[in-house]
Every structure is written in C-alpha cells, then in structure tokens.
Image 1 (cartoon, rainbow, N blue to C red):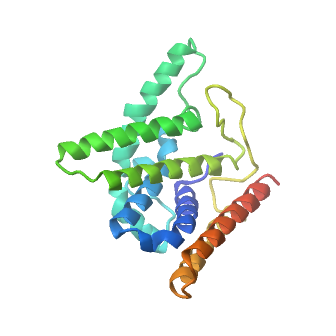
Image 2: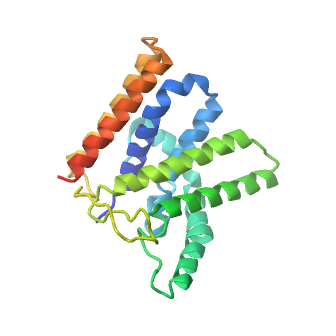
Length: 245
C-alpha cells in the first residue's frame, strides 16, 4: 500500500491546523472554531474519494483514539455524504472532461485529478457551492461559518496532498498539466513506520504546548503565533526530510 491510512491523515491534518489555530482560538466564537475543525476533518479525507475503499465512505475512521476519536464519532456520520458527493458529483464529471479533452489519455484513477492543486480548487469550490445551496434550501444562512468551513476543507485537502507527497506513490501536484510526482520513502498502510507516529505525536504536543503558552502562561497572541508558525515549519521540514531518507 502506498498511501497513508485515514486516521493518519486525520491526526496529522487536525494537529497541523490546530497548531496554527491555537493562538487565535480566543478571537473566534465556538461555532467558528467548530466550522474550521469540521472543514479540516472532512478535507483531510476528501482527495481519497477517488478510491472506493477510502475512509471518507465510512461513518467511522478506524485507528483514532481519545479526544480525536470522540470528535470524529460525532461528525463521522456525514462523511459518506461528502464522500459520495465528491466522487459522483465532482470527481467523475471532472475526470470525464479530462478524458474527453485528452482523447482518452487521462483516465480516472486514484491519485489523479483529486490529488492535485487543480483538484483541490475544484472540490473546494463545488463542495462549497453544494453546501451553500443545500443550506439555503433548508432555510439556514450563516455565510461566515460556511466560509470558515470551506477554508478548513481546502486546508485539509492541501495537507492531505503534502502528506501523500512523503510516500512512494507521490503526488503530481500540477496534474493534468504535468504528471511529474513529488515522492518520499515513507512506509505506509500499517503501524510499523515510526516516522508517521512520531510526527503526529510531535504536532499534537506542539499544539497543546501553544495552547498552554497562550491561555495558562498568558503569553501575547503575537508571540504564540510566531512560536506556532516556527514549530509548524520546523516539524514539517523535519518530517519531509525524514520521509525522503
């Protein structure tokens, strides 16, 4: 297997986003924080809607533990809705257009259009549009929360691509303009590779450290922001270098 598991994508993405969000939590309403985290959660699994056995088609993400599992259990019931929406309402139509324009050269398949910058833009825009229409039909309007959820979704999908770029299968970020892949050597599909577990643990520790620094020790938001950005960049750089070794 050449891809990270669903729980690995969820943990790394949520801890990465949480690390950057930690200094600013006090500036956001609870609903806004929930919208961002929900978007990150769904976005972390969204690109894998091009694979029939992906975690986004299930109501539970196996492998999660503790608080992350409880959060996922609460929101996981809607995962299949997003999974089938992306697969049949976004992925297949886009893959069909690319197949037609390329005269059959570009075929639907895992780590194709959905695992690219163009794919992230496509599924973010269409998912946001579908959500906006659905909420309007239900008589509920909260454009700010919808925008935050869509922003979290985009960030989660981009982080998914960054994570898969560390695996042997790699990611063709500029597909379909270029099929050149960025690859790593990270062993995936099981629990044997300590690099993935260490990275997720380090991100989680950094996130909670920034939360304590901001709200327990009372450090200024600007200072904690600088710390969180530094830790985010340092940990991701270390993980990328380790994944290529």
